[in-house]
Image (cartoon, rainbow, N blue to C red; front, side, top):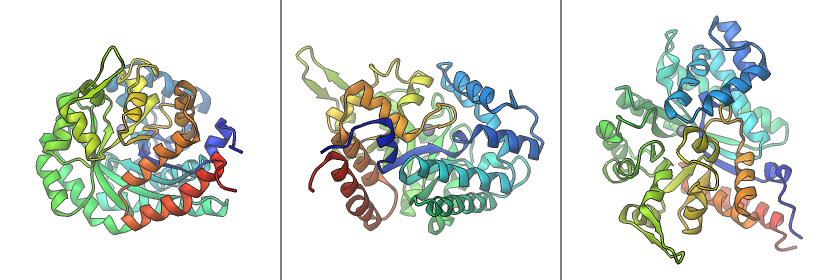
Length: 365
Ligand SMILES: [Zn+2]
């Protein structure tokens, strides 16, 4: 018998998240505590409930630029070693409590230097936090592995430095690189030498593309920069035409992305908040999923979107009638696209995910 697809069972099911920002996932109370400890006095409220609402409402404004403004506060408290370690530890615990077994959490080290921390120190503090969070989760009976992606900011010129930092820490938990920040006016080709460098170093990277800016941004990320995955990639749907008879035709960019199995790190709630999709009904997720793109389900910013990985799955299940086999497919898509070794991906898929989803779907005994 199949297990009912309820929100609680979705939470218990093992999941993989590839696109989750550390500075977008703080607990509201932690933000308040750290603001007090570190002398940050610009928080809009010191009441956890009011603050959580403020973040959600600001992020709901419909513009990516205003959405990014909310990060001034979270980044504002991520300026000491202890604060960073605490935030990373809690992120691992929160993800594990939501049933995430493998997470890639990303952050931009250059944003934590307002009080003079060094880049390597920031990476070490973060890794220490994830290890601590994973061991606390293990003590609670939950297994989570966290890999990190270091982000360069599109509007800054420090990508090369951050890419070198990622390569330097590749054996201590950093699994890849990304560029984040405003897409319009800052095409990924601005950092083309950095992507060339990363390829020469055999380092994995993803690129935020096709969120607030259209198909040319996706094309540049894939064809000129060599992105292995796309952050959002929502606008790829511009290259997919659905005829009146329901027939679907892919343009060249969309075909290439599908053929090469380039994963799309989709974040439904975030896409609605930034206006990348007008409504869940109009979100290209179901179209791209039906056409067998390698779609994955992600949170982006758990604080701003007031979401978890399982609640994002819940939204899709509710809107599009997905069953366990779909939840499994999207999860396997994410595991296949993870920036960890092939053997580790196989172990995750064969030993953890497939047996769990077989049991949920009621296959076998
Ligand atoms: Zn993002």
